[in-house]
Length: 466
Image (cartoon, rainbow, N blue to C red):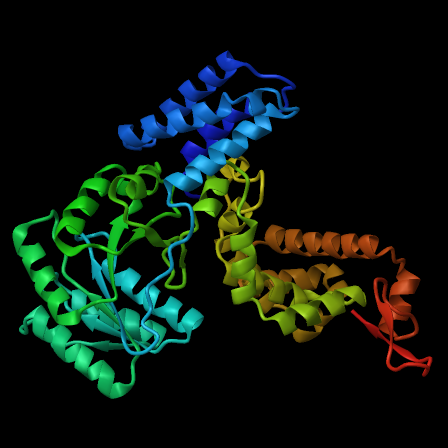
């Protein structure tokens, strides 16, 4: 979860005020001292901290807050609003050329993750904007950089343009854009060289590439773990290239938060996208309001809904819901549910978006490898056993599954027990006993929550809709 440590400290500071019927100036002062320390420890620039504290304090000491029936909640709302403002207020959209080829130039220091993010961004825009991307390999200095981009392109089934390491980057970009026009690509993403630190040679080359490419976006890729140093890097690039946006990587780690909370305020460069994992589909739009909510333990349900909408087939989900309503739930259904969850992201990441759960996950070990173990166990069942879970009350069947899956008997037994608990809970939620369940499955009784809907006026007949 991003900003785990910072979020925990801020939540603890504010929690002391929430629930109180009355607070005074001294309470606000104490809270602001703790917030100041939390932000400085998170490597947020001292100028940003000073401005943030002053703005929150001024609003929190207002008569409207101090005389409110829920002053602590009002302070929480103020802190949320100020965090959101600090990070840019609203999501900054990518600048897409709707009437021609969109060109993105990726820039950044070596090791920031430019090559991987170029692939992620191409994949994201292909999926969400229906674009046909072309990756251009213009990093001719780093060993294997070109091969890395080509490999990423193959994994995503996205074409990569390369002329090898013996052609100048400016010429590669020129020919690459010409190739894109010929082949009908409407998005070009240029992966450029980085350095261990900003130098004149790097900047000169990037400025020349910018002149050739005339990019719609110059995206600076920054490792979120660099903290406050990210600001200095951003200012150096911005001075020469007029950077249009930032793409923060490694935001899934327990970053201190300094980069995201300082960048926009000190550079005025909007954070447009963030990398939230190692997989090539783990990139998302940066929403300041949602990130502020996650930092303060308020969750991020909107992003969770978006991820679910993008990754889960609505028809499959409806079919699953109908089967559960009718009392059918077997290991095939269970496997489908696991696969739906995996498409959304890591389990810890999903739970972290639910209000109030973020801080509770800090020391909890949630291993997504368990998904693979469960899939192995279910994969070792016969088709008949998957359809009829009651067959797995047999010890000999469990022992056979144990040998086939390579997991222990205890793991197989735990899975079957948890599965039976889930089935029992579903029956209880629907208010069914065994005889009613049998009638529903035989079609002799309508499942609960089904609604009778008339087919036509005056016909007096209906069908069940779920």
